[in-house]
Structure formats: C-alpha cells, structure tokens
Image (cartoon, rainbow, N blue to C red):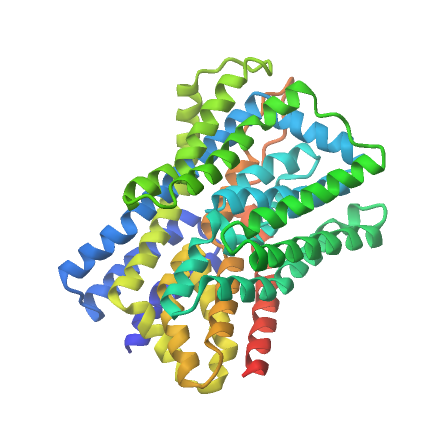
Length: 486
C-alpha cells in the first residue's frame, strides 16, 4: 500500500502525459497527489520538512532563475539578429544544412547544457535549428535529442549527488557514466537520422556523420573524465566536436571568417562560459557556501550574458527594444515553463524528504535480480517526472546502492547507469518539451505575415512517442548490460 501511495505522483504524471494534457496541468496535479500521499501515508516531522526546504529551496530558485534568463537571452539574441548572424556563419561555413544540424545537435546544445544545465541547451539549439531551415517540430525534437550530456550539465551536480549518496567517488561515477552514455549518444544519432533521412539527399552519409559526431562527443567526455575529472567533461567533449567540425570546414575551404558582427553575436556566450568557469575556479576555496553558489550560479552569469547581448545589439543593428520590454515578454513565455519546472522540482524534494522515493525503490528491489533490469527504468521515470537528474538521484541513488549491495551486485554500475537513464529521460520531461516548444514559437520580426505555429499539444503528441521509444530501448539495453555484469 505504501509503495502504491509513493508511486501515485509518478503514475498521475504519466497518465496525464499519455492523455496529452498540458505540462502545467501535469505538474500541478502530480504535486497535489504527492502532497496528499505524504500527508496520508508518510507523515513527516515539521523540522525535517523545514530542513528539506532549506536544502532544496536554493536549488528551486536557481533553476527558475536559469530558465527565465535563458528564455530572455534567447529572445534578445533572436530579436537583435545575433542568432541570424551565428546561424548564417554556420550555414556558410558548413555549406549544407546537414553539417550545421549535426554541429548544433552534438556540439552547441551539449556545450550549452554542460556549461549551464537545466535544459538551457534547448534555448540555444532551437533558434539555430529554426534558422537552419528546420520546422518547429523538427527544431524542438532535435534540440531535445542534443541533451545527451546532462550527467555533466552545470558541471555535474547530479552526478555528484549520486556519488555522495551511494558512497562512491565522483571520479568513478563520472567515468562509468561516460561509458554507459555511448548507447545514449548512438540512439540520439539514429533517431535524428530517422527524422531527417527523408529530407537528406544522401541518407547514408548523414547517418555516418551523425554516428561519427556522437562517438566523438562520447570519446571526448570519457577522456576528459579520466584526465581532467568529471565537472568539465561535458564542456571538453562538446568543444572537441565543435573544433573538429570547424577544422573540417577550414580544410574543406568552406570556413567563412567570423567577422566583427559574428564575434559580437557570440560575445554573450563567451562571457557566460569564461565567466562561469573562472568564477568556479576562483571561488573553489571560499568559506561561504552561499556566496560561492551565488557567484558560480548559472542564473547569475546568464543574467550578465543577457545584459551583454542587450547592449551589444546596437552594434548589431538591433531594434532598440528596451530591456524591460523584452524581460516582460520573456516573463510571459517563462510562466508556464517556470510553473511546470518548479512544480516537478518541488515534487522531487517532497519525495526525498518524506521517504516516498525510498519506499518506492525498496519495494521494487524486492523482485530480486530482476531489479537490475528495472532499476535504470525507475530512475528514468524519476528523471521524466522531475526533469532533473539531480532530483532523480536525490530520490533514488541511496536506494539503488542499497539494492545493489543486498543482491551482491556492483553498486557503481547500478548507480552510474541509473544516473545516465535519469539524465536521458529529461529529454522527455514535460518541462523540457514545453521549453523547446516555447523557444520554437518565439516571434521573429518578419516583413510579411507568417504561418501560425502548431499548438503545444500537437508538438508534444509528435515528439513524445519518438522520444519515449528511444528512452525505452536505451533503458532496456542498459538494464540488460547491468544484469549481465551481475
């Protein structure tokens, strides 16, 4: 009975998702179900709830700030033409849509996600894919498929949580997660090919290009984990993909000089990356955790990047729209995304604080060695619900470790593979799909009337099954690998 009560919020979310309800509706009803289940079946002392609020509160605030600033940055760079210049440079250098698309999916989106996390890679990828000529549906789906470096998003806090709760080292979990990510990147490449093959003049070449970029990204991440440690691994791996493509463009004679306007368009992202990495390095030995977290917050540096983008727009021939006006429009787009993400993140904290997540995991572990097949799927469901591998690992990492120990299996393998599946499941999370949709329908100034974009329900109905099949296949494969290792 307790296990069913603990599973109720996840079941409600999945039911509403399959019923094609809006993401906000899923979040609110799932959270309400979690609250009712906690009150009726998992009474928790007030001081423990207060401690959980103090622990997870800053995370919720930071996540919402990052999402708002990401939406605002995307709007500014789109309206000022910065995205046009970047995508135009990529199109001219790549000489074809295929090369530019692969560069975005396995280079730019993983890079942005590794630097900032919380799905911000989507806000970078969608506008560029639109500018490369893809439809709203394709741009949203391809940007979500680029979320293959989530275990290293925001320099890997979710992976760190998994390691700490399981009593493992971050190095070991990072390396094993990189090894287990290979099916994820290959699956993402194949799904991208299935979506684009009908439009490609040479489907075989497209598949080879996608698989090569996926393997290159994974190899870079693994090497960085081994040599530099886990936190910067996603950044290094994605930069490797970017560097190899730009080098190929140069050797092929198609690389176009960036020019002053392109460098100005790239400046906000450079400030974000360099500033964030420098802040993390300079504050590593700081005694104040709160101040350190503030100075190294992706949200803070995204706000700085927004200011840079806004006031660099004059040099780009921007429209002159005041920052306040753009912030208000971004806020309106952010409201459904913020409510959805905040609701699921709070639900994750509630499951962890009340013991509901632990109860669910313990009940599932009772099936014996078969749990090695189910464990990665369970963490995948947690990643789907919360949209965060950090929240998923907070709920279930300790339980996964306990289950592996009880069965005499590898704790490292089960925890790492669960970290990977939870991360991959964020592609399908309602909050991520909604974010991709909102980015895809951001209005761009046009000379004439434009066709009305598809509805959120239509886009979700098209994206959902494709990502669900990919997630099911990869989770099953990783579960089988874990069972065979046992």
